[in-house]
Amino acid sequence: MQELANIFIKSIFIDNMVFAYFLGMCSYLAISKTVKTSVGMGLAVIFVLSITVPINYLLVNFVLDKGALVWLGEEFKDIDLSFLSFIMFIAVIASMVQLVEMIVEKFSPALYSSLGVFLPLIAVNCAILGGSLFMQERAYSNITEAVVFGVGSGIGWFLAIVGIAAIREKIRYSHVPPALRGLGITFIITGLMGIAFMSFMGIKL
Amino acid sequence: MSKNSLFSKKNKSLLTDPLDDNNPVTVQVLGICSALAITVQLKPAVVMALSVIFVMCVANVVVSLMRNFIPSRIRIIVQLVVIASLVIIVDEVLKAYVYDVSKELSVFVGLIITNCIIMGRLEAFALANSPWESFLDGLGNAFGYGWILIAVAFFRELLGAGTLYGYPVLEKLGVYELGYENNGMMILPPMALVTVGVIIWIQRMRNQKLIETN
Image (cartoon, rainbow over all chains, first blue to last red; front, side):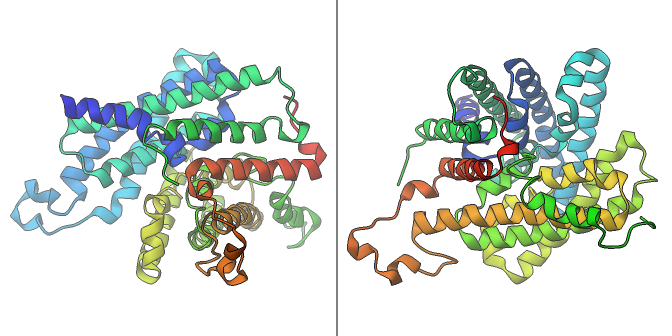
């Protein structure tokens, strides 16, 4: 249980997708103009991450890794398919995203139109693929850990995008140098938030 | 296409626009993730830029050739499969010829697949245009991405570690004896964001029409 809590906290704060690895920056910057759309986007990311990470975990452990195909029979134990992992991961992710897109279009057309092109782009949100790749790299020992890691990373991303959206809504009333308005200042604020988040693991210069 | 020559004015602007006015990183806000994560040193940044140029041009041409056969419901999967296969090729080549850099780039080679520039250009351009135009568009955007990447890496490596491409420039110039010290902050992730922010700031001061309203 404590293990799981560790992974959960670590993936939200210390290994935060946005601030520690810059994953999912594109949609993070483009969708964060208002809190409302960013909440929708954040929830979509949590949802997709918590589905794709466990599915890819099963793929890695029962199909792709060296010796993973042993359940088919003894003669398969030397097969190593891990070079296929990119394409398998992305296929899982793309089909899940297409599914989410159809569901959102059907049940919440308003959210669908406000997310616009960025809903299909969740498929190429690096946070999603990054989640699966980190899961593979860190070799979690069972599927519960993988689920917790997926949900945790999603929540970390959600917090980051809602935070920046709230700041951007307020910064509209401040006097920013014209050339820095919009994108420029968002980058610099994200940098400052990143420094704050780094204090969770300690800054070493 | 048949009416235009290969290098008509329109085609030329496809190639040059992304370098400044319509830069993928600073104006279209695409491909930020990798632009930030692998710019601690110049060498991985150059390798990354080259890989993206390759993947982007080929993917644009392939998708543009197939554009009339792809049903729009499953276009994302088709595009991703094209990109992912190209990235696997790049990954294997990097592992074979520049193993140390490939180690350094780690998951970020895989993340070229989800580099939104490539996907974004496929969606926005290659699906609606002929192969040659898509090739130019891919080349232009990849270069626009590449020069930002290299610029950020240049400043981060120079100010953070005092080297360029692994060569100790500042030490040879003798600035350490004058009491200069490396700024360790530049190596940390957050400073990449600030560096890009400053590049955007400079670009928009020069190019007033890019300024946003809020």
